[in-house]
Length: 502
Ligand code: NAP
Ligand code: MG
Image 1 (tube, protein in one colour):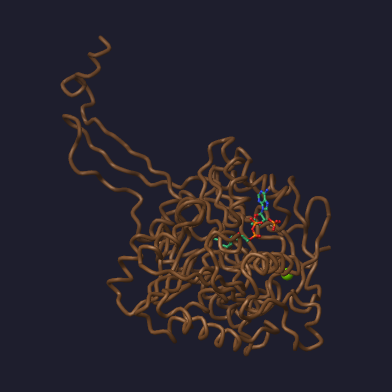
Image 2: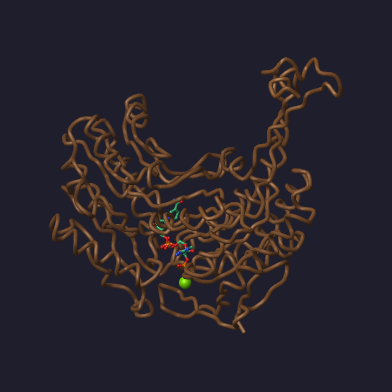
């Protein structure tokens, strides 16, 4: 039997096949738990449960305030289990315990809180002023979409689970979630927490299992109305194809290669810290990481030396130690990807100014861990593969520019458009640059600050639609226009029927 179980139709269960798979601590290589490996039949059962809960159950008919109360109960329960959740998240994903305590658990909580507020405050009905016809009354009803599936990546497992489940539930939908196979632990723990909140059976279903079977079923099954996917652009394209069979609504949050632009009027010390924070937080395994630093020529040399000096102080080590700045990457496989790109960088660009290898001075218990040092390539041509392709690891490309126009052109020369930054002493100048960046978020003199209260998502091949904010709530609602002709008999206000001669 697995240590954790699938949550389907309000009950905990093993996979129908009885199969399990193991999950590991990427710092030590130690096995953490055996998890049930759901297959297509488990996914179908979960989807059918969600369908029944939507079509026949009370959830979509409840008021926003009633649903908000249930979401707040989930918040209470997450807070009660916060220490355990933070520990599981750090152990399983390799993110630091500090990140888990300060970002992951509070981030999940604030997502449930925000969408509870949305359920209470956003109206379900909006009356429209005036009539486009001789007489009519018109209004909009906002209704839940139906069965919403969520497929999430391994970099922020708990927050991503909350970003999929909370808005779906708040708006009256039912949900089926599949976490990434490398990091399913916190989502299965969240299932236990949600079970304590006593929602009607089938409203939330959580399954660990492979993308190729469970994920494909969640994106293609005809009983599903909407699929929300966060992950790579490559799998995002596949999700769109799968969802097109029954024309499902699709939200995609995909990859990025974001530019962090440092203008020559920036406070260099602050901007250098900002660029490093924007790139190396969580080992660069953040979709909106500012992995291209565009630096203006006049400050270039001084700025690059500052970057390298500060980067060499970043402590890579055991993610469970409070003094660690960067833990292991999520897996040995991810280290191999980084190594491939660093080799490519050495061929394309030359020797990195720092990093370019695993740390050498790690204690024995970490010698099988997936560690990699912060790595900086300078004088990179934006056309180089390491500047164009998402690496998803601790690798920064520094690219020089002369004018603000050139910075904007380089920033926008990417298939991606998720986010970016502008570091400058002149907010007006920074805003003018920000306005021309083709990305869903721009941070001025900051980076990485994402709140459930503000929309997040990508331009171009970084995605479709927005999560979070009021937009991220409305994207989980159907829009129904109701037109009432108040004339219940007679033809004064029905003269258009005469066009047909009836
Ligand atoms: P991934 O390979 O695209 O996987 C994401 C999820 O999709 C996983 O749950 C995976 O399951 C599943 N999946 C894989 N193949 C599938 C298929 N054919 N059909 C349905 N589902 C499938 O991405 P990842 O490697 O986990 O995460 C890294 C990527 O995510 C990066 O490119 C990053 O930029 C992107 N990302 C974007 C955002 C954003 O908000 N824009 C946030 C975080 C990450 P398995 O785990 O079982 O393979
Ligand atoms: Mg793991």
